[in-house]
Amino acid sequence: MNVPKHIGVIMDGNGRWARGRGLPRTAGHRAGTDATRKIVRACGELGVSYLTVYVFSAENWGRPTIEVSMLMDLLVEMTRREIRNLNENNVRLTAIGNLEKLPPKTRAELKKGIEDTSGNTGLTLILAISYGGRAEIAGAARAFARDAVNNPGLIDELTEDVFGNYLYTAGIPDPELIIRTGGDCRISNFLLWQAAYAELYITDTLWPDFDREALVKAIEDFNKRDRRFGKVKE
Image (tube, rainbow, N blue to C red):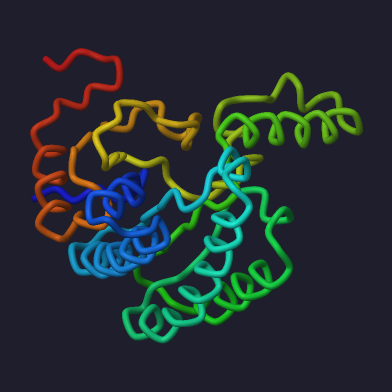
């Protein structure tokens, strides 16, 4: 089985999972963290090099304050609790997004987790937090423009690869497969630049129910795709 080097996941369905069981949304988010743990381990075992999970979008700041606060606290709890597991499984943690918007406690715990796993050489787990694809591209354009003011020659040297170095994901290969749980057929501002040639896999399975078997099914489907990148195979 050809395993994608980089998989992105839009984790959707926590709220619906909880509602279907007569539980509060917080229960769904907690169940979602359990699913994340299982998928991180499965990706490591299957030989995936990079896993990017869409934890909290830039638009999610518009949710009710009590839910946002709970999600930030849950992120602190999850990071603190999972560091040992990540180290035992040789997983390196990192994060992308507008992290300056995170509450100080959340930002500090995340930074500590990144530092504590920085020496690991297995799967790289990338948390997309306070992340928006359009904002990422706009930020990269501003950063390039600032450099070009000091060195106008850069304008004629701008290529897609050069611009990619200004993105959050500089140095990370583009995702080959993006999985969306919960059934919605949209990309929701996730890795807009990087997903140009990613294969999309949509499943009705809600994120808390997504497990290793479901992941393998997605990878098997990926293996059936004819990836031509706009070219024609003879």
